[in-house]
Image 1 (cartoon, rainbow, N blue to C red):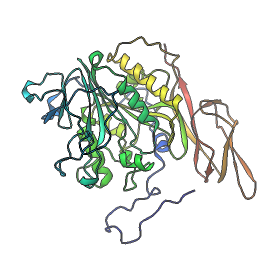
Image 2: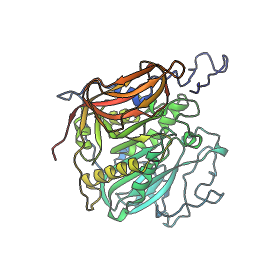
Image 3: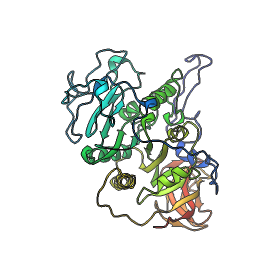
Length: 430
């Protein structure tokens, strides 16, 4: 197993945090469950009510009108004149834009159903690509992150889909792409904003973390004057996320773990609990979330938010991707954003309690069970074998449940979270 690098003494100011993978808490995929508060029979959390449309408090003054483009068209290759071109003013990166097809309009003439995002106005009945940058890189070397926007011809909620907050989580990138490219703005009610690759640098390097080795999903809503991860989180949250009425943050398992397609949702929040009912053929796992997660920060702002987990990092898994796309299509239909023939499948369970089973000994893990399997107390889930002594240590289920997440076969250390068991399941009424 690779040992994460550390900084030599004196590389940082004495008050600066030294960050390695070990200085973070337990891996987020595990900590999300371990730190979750129990489900409450009567919610004591505040509920929020948002009015769909362009509220003045989140409406920016537009600098330009977004061109209407077909997202299915292949974007031009990166050249000095392409929509990935460098900004003219290095200190104020411009948004990614192809040659405009729509003449510029004065802000006061904009239709009431338009949306202003990143200093760009997207008119009703149009779709476009614009660019977002956290403004932290060397301006001459920075590449804006594409943001896909589809503004429907009719009014409705604003749904945001984000993926690859961890740069090694690939399934979500493809889920966002397929959902956004399938939308017709002339048939859509409301708006859909998609950020397929949030952590662009991590993605380019196949790395989960930001360049400063911090986990971005521990630092929302961020700080404008904080460290790198806090500034990155603040830029995304203030410039994009605040425009959302609903948010789905898409992830995969981490550290060579894989997850059954599922929603992580705070079922103590009535609006979130109702929201999860719009997703078809995907399990729901109760999790209140932890401080610093995008989902938690969005909920605190009154945005209905859930985390979607699907599959394993550093892989493209068609079955997991199809499950994610299907569930988002059903959500949009349930929210009245799209109207299409949709056949609902059998309801998946809601797991109001779940836990991770850890390896008690180090060695080579070989699983005897598959993702999604039902298990009973005492059943052997896998065996850890010491490669030197040949000693074998079985990992057994502690009770009845279902495997909703698990480690792939690998070398593990004592205490490694190996199997995520969902218990106390309830199947919603059809």
